[in-house]
Length: 303
Image (cartoon, rainbow, N blue to C red; front, top):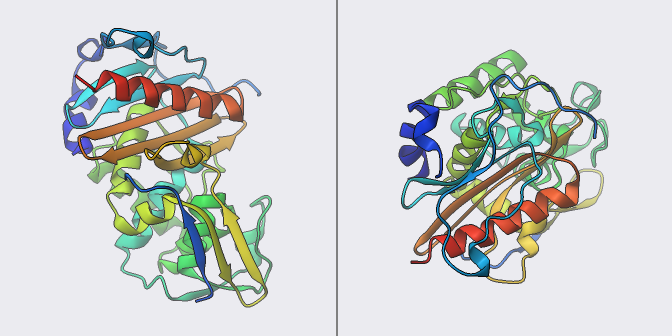
């Protein structure tokens, strides 16, 4: 497992890692800015393991502020750039929100009434005050469209208080070995939600190991009915629309302090690759760099 194989990297000296109901959904093929906040650790140049020969072996250029590529089967870091630098992670936070919700034992078939507390300051949302929504549908809205009201409602549905949910998120992070991850709320809007590229790789892999979360992340489009209307959400993860059968699941994120981010993993027979890009200058560049790193990593793992 990726989490187990990366534990040694997290606690080893940095030098050791160098070079190295009326619901429908459309799933992907299963094979299955402004200046960002100051880093809390010294920035490091991009490093890559020895690539395979040929055009695909060229290490892709990465302009994003931090990135990592992990070969989960071999337990190796294939590419790193500022992988241990703690940064805001924006809506990648929602992966932890989903994990904590499912561990609460609450029923996804429960319904939540959207309140002003969930709407206030959440930005653009599908939902209106008083709208009644199934939790399962909120999970799709949260992980596909990255709806912040949905994330807050999911936290409410867990039965925990706001502070209690944040505390549970940090306990889960500790249980996963994410020692540089600190979370203060469930949406990612707060720049106080911080982690590293390396730990985001571990987080997305942990989320993907939950069958319910993985199924949501692998969905391109989802339609559901609330008390108010029929809603449709589409995934913000453009990598689900890759033209081949290997479509990585994951989560995007953006706030000004974080830049454009994405954490993805691809797990198919003989392949277990996680790619994280944090602090990309544009939305399109995060997808381009992540896609280039995935292609490069897949070529690098073919021996």
